[in-house]
Image (cartoon, rainbow, N blue to C red; front, side, top):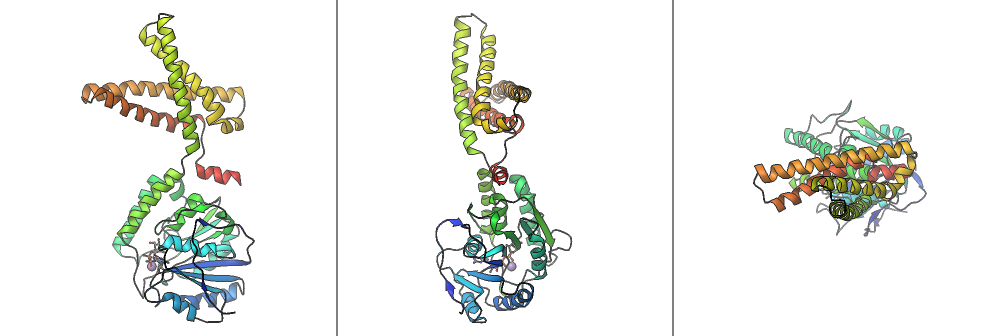
Length: 395
Ligand code: GDD
Ligand code: MN
């Protein structure tokens, strides 16, 4: 059998579960790499025919390059059927290309590397040795043995700034690796099987770490070589896409269902508060301030009851016992009361010293205090795991 052009995939980016037929599938995304691809393939064959004879495949995903990179691959060692090509005429982009390649792959381990010879080959062997005991192995420029001295000052700086922004927006994900920008890594197929990926821009690694089932990550250092033929396709649009991607992944990590339940409970709290306030004021003849304080406390108790039962019921079950329930209650109470105090302080500051319209100030204050309440209670009262941690805990 000889090489042939594979069908372009459409639809969601999901790797459906299947039994791997070979050990390794390497995906190489290309755009205008006619000058480099044949040299790279040749080197890969020499390396892998020795290391994994008949047990690997190379999948080039080309975005219909003007310089006919895809044709170069077809012409290269025509009888080899473990080299495959997808020529994408509609879909574009580096991250989606990598996903499409993995989707048609048959390997137990999936890898990605650049097609421009900037990634040296040795790390591939190291990654192969390490992947068995890990879920993801990243070739990094920032660890021992790694470097990017050859990169120009601008690219180096951008790379570092990008990492800083990333650690700020998505610390739990970005800080798991030293080089979150890396486009050279290997993972177990099972890491992303049956999970819908939403690749954007250049950074497929972020997507894999954010959505995949990854417990163990290790790294190998490598030196990023100078590009000899062709040119880099990275541009300002990709930097913007990177920031957009970070924000999307941050939102994806929110426990949305819990937030909805939390808001519903908050609404019952509001009703309880109003009702109790009315009763205390009219039937018990309490002072307004005392009625307000007592009714707020009654609402807090109401909210705790429903949140502990419903919003975080699953988490509460994992930490049973009256003592721990009591601890959750006190934390919740303290955070809500501090929120109340904050509410008064912020509101009077906004209206009295800043001269803001009282109704506008009230809305702003409610938003600020709600965020305060949510962040602190999710974190300290119930210790809510992120979406990601929930995925990892299930397996
Ligand atoms: N199919 C496809 N579609 N391939 C693409 C596209 C695209 O839109 N854009 C780039 N590629 C291919 C290139 O042909 C090359 O094989 C590889 O993706 C990397 O692209 P370069 O344009 O050479 O990227 P770079 O050298 O600037 O960036 C490299 O280093 C970064 C770290 O600084 C890549 O490895 C990045 O992934 C990495 O983040
Ligand atoms: Mn490059």
